[in-house]
Length: 158
Image 1 (cartoon, helix red, strand yellow):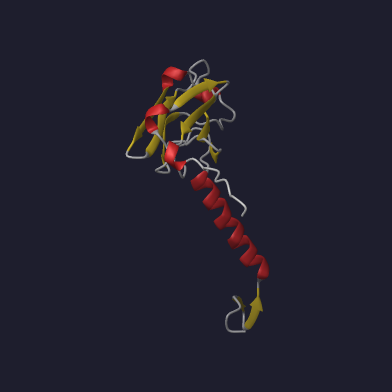
Image 2 (image 1 turned 45 degrees about the horizontal axis):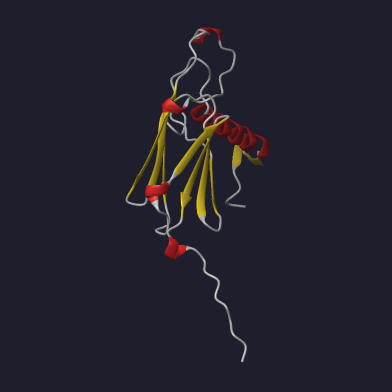
């Protein structure tokens, strides 16, 4: 019983599980307060005020396709770079200024600059990338180099 927290009341050792639950609740509240600040407080979120768009990457027969969710942005707000087999998507989502900050009841949408860098497979031909931006989704089609595409080999039967 040496590892069980106890609370000394007069001359009795009393196990206090409710005190431990209160301590746990207090610690959880502290962690949530650090992670999700209340309205009007300074920004101490885990990302330091920055956000990162959600992305999907998948491999098709001839291409590697990257899709990034960028709602509320215009194509002029987005920059796409490929250098040394690293795809970088960056830009900035500006906050709407129609509503004053003190009038917000809750604000959960992210604003500010973003930056995503993704290592590409060496078989991608970065010079032939196609980019389409529609309905807040950026879709990049990165063609594979010819030598990287799967080739079917015919087998002769003797």
